[in-house]
Image 1 (cartoon, rainbow, N blue to C red):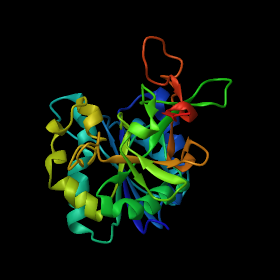
Image 2: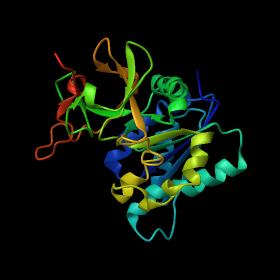
Image 3: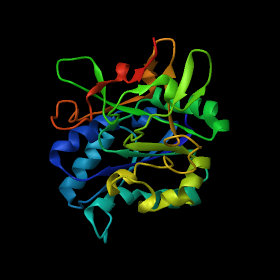
Length: 272
């Protein structure tokens, strides 16, 4: 399974030390769909900085890239919401776009992530929930992966879940933040025309709300959110194809926070 035509929006608040993350995530863009169109939203419009952004994203490859510098934001944090107007225009004017993806500038998405999402979208369609991803980080000198956003371990038996087979489930984790969203046209229509289209829609901060998508819209009864993560019951592990790398790895070694402290393979507790 693959995406026919993908519109990608990335928020990049210009910082020279973060260009490397934008450059890294862009290496995968061409592989994410048959046709891919990239829109970068930044706070700078200087020629040198715009060229730096364009070089980081295109890297001498054939890739359609547009850079937007919104004006009259009112507050710098609203830069993350600037992509919404463009997505609305694209949705209304180009029916051939099959999927829309919003990314923070340091979220590394691969083709395997896309294939997982597409397969899971069909598996979960009748349950009216949405396949989701789990951000992870790596500690220097270790191959272990740590969950960026999930701060507490959960019991498998107590979590809301969807059973696909005897060995594969989808789990509804209590902390669903993923720093991005991926929606097909059906879901994007719901996003554009529902409560998630305004910044007041979720309990998160203003920048994080822009990445929520439909996370907290039409949530089924007794669920934490609409986001469900693939889980292999046989190996007792989160589906590796649902994992997306938070490239800075800045929480895993940061003291004084619960973020990035639980190993991915220890997130789910099973009764003996």
